[in-house]
Amino acid sequence: MLDILKETDAFLEGHFLLSSGKHSNGYVQCAKLLMYPDKAEIVVNKIVNKLEGIDFDIVVGPAMGGVIVSYEIGRQTGKPSIFVERENNEMKLRRGFTIEKGQKVLIAEDVVTTGKSAYEAIQLVEEAGGEVVGIGCIVDRSNGEIKYPIYSGIELDISTYEANNCPLCKENIPVVKPGSRKIAMK
Image (tube, helix red, strand yellow):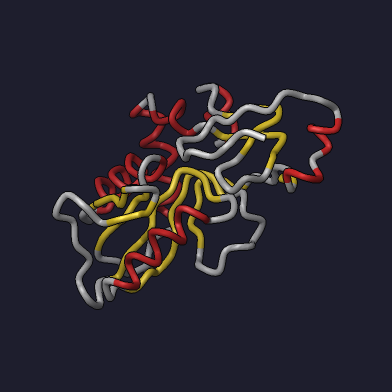
């Protein structure tokens, strides 16, 4: 898995501002991996294999990172796939997508670090009466901090720092904001 991430230039090293506001010395830009459908199929199949025996009805991916992952999990499992997206900076179900009461839902993500986007999607699912059974993701870098089961293609231990206590900032290494969520650079 790590070889595929490196081969597609998805695994980056440097100084990054994460969507959570934290800083990190590594970043996985899954969009670079997802450019290659054959490689994405291989990586997502590792997630699907871990889902064997897990009962779910639908896959929900938070936009942007979870859309393609949700689709590919749905394609490989034969389950419907939808996504939630931001409207006025708040995650919403749009485009006529719905979650039925009692529906078992798998959240799909590219990378899970703090789970911020996944938790926003989970809140929507639960408000609609759905039951979240877990999170399927390409990369789990949460270090066990997420309260839902995670079914990942790979677990990576990449350092994460509070912005006000970042050793990379202290070394004056320029920070890069690679993700899709709008957040002020500090």
